Image 1 (cartoon, rainbow, N blue to C red):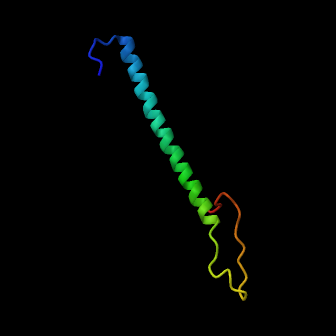
Image 2: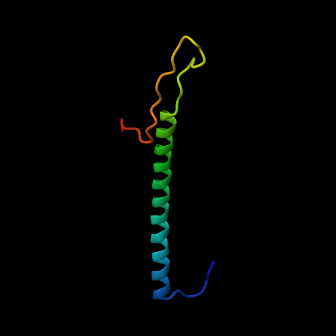
Length: 71
């Protein structure tokens, strides 16, 4: 920890750094949220129906859309 005197210029730089860190945190949280929604949509679209190996049942069509249009 710096224990010397802080000039007005250094205090302003510290304030700007804190603002940037807060913005970066918000952007990171937004990116994680987007990735979570995207992965949930992909997982929902690639689910396969049960009993696909039975010769008496046809496999249902699986949607290949990447974006869940129900949103």
